[in-house]
Amino acid sequence: MGKRIEGKHIKHSSNLKPFTETENKSIFLIKSSTPYISALKQITKLLNNFTKSKNVKKFQNESFKNVKYVTVKGMSKTIEKTLNLAIHFQDKNYKVDILTGSVKVLDEFVPTKNVPEEEEDEDDDRIYQKRMVSSIEVRIWIRRDQ
Image 1 (cartoon, helix red, strand yellow):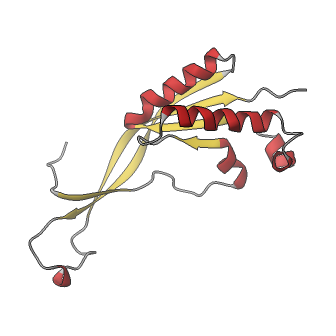
Image 2: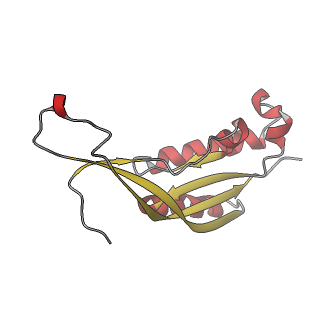
């Protein structure tokens, strides 16, 4: 563990590539500010959209019909909330897979100084550090009505 850096901490997303439309609709990211009940309702709605694909026009597309599960992802302090969501859907008789891993994230620090803002050059003083963060991926399998 390195020494603590005083200043503003700017967190960057660990996502390296943008999601496709299908991935965007089938992946749910949990943040520390995401309320549990809200996440539960949104994931349930998402699962219902895929289950009742004949009634929802948007999900009639062939790429959406190939989606087999909804992915719920959480990192570091959101792991517990993500696991609680997985247990909830497992109790509702959904097949649930849990994958654990680590993700490399980039932290950006802007040191605080006593220099007037006009004289500051923001890019020169920034400090970047990489670190590994625990992550979890929960796959909730879609029950399609055949």
